[in-house]
Length: 119
Image 1 (cartoon, rainbow, N blue to C red):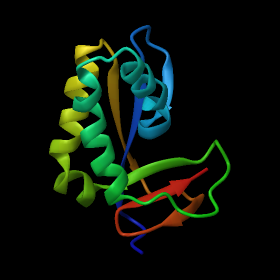
Image 2 (image 1 turned 60 degrees about the vertical axis):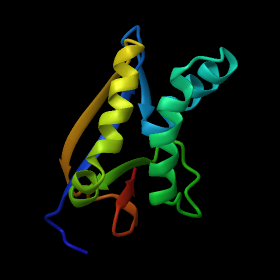
Image 3 (image 1 turned 45 degrees about the vertical axis):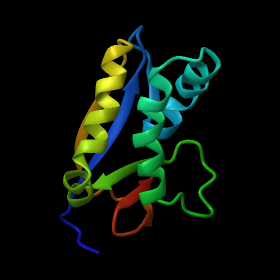
Image 4 (image 1 turned 90 degrees about the vertical axis):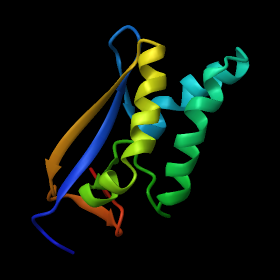
């Protein structure tokens, strides 16, 4: 694959400013809490996350919790509306979606046409 590609990583900060991790790990507990509270924002957040999960399979063999994921820039632009929908819901909850643009890291452990995983 291309060595000079640009990638987009998302991280999540909660309403107290604490970094909760990447997109899926960072929102796992929030989704659970919204579900348990029967909060109307659950579906608004779960729908775009589920769509992203469907579009980007979790690779087999990735077990290290320090593994980070980033989307290809092309994938991000193609599905930008999903990320905007997630950001909208997080803003409603005083959470923050941080978008980090990065060059291809040296320590890539998985790669497909939509994403990379790296440590």
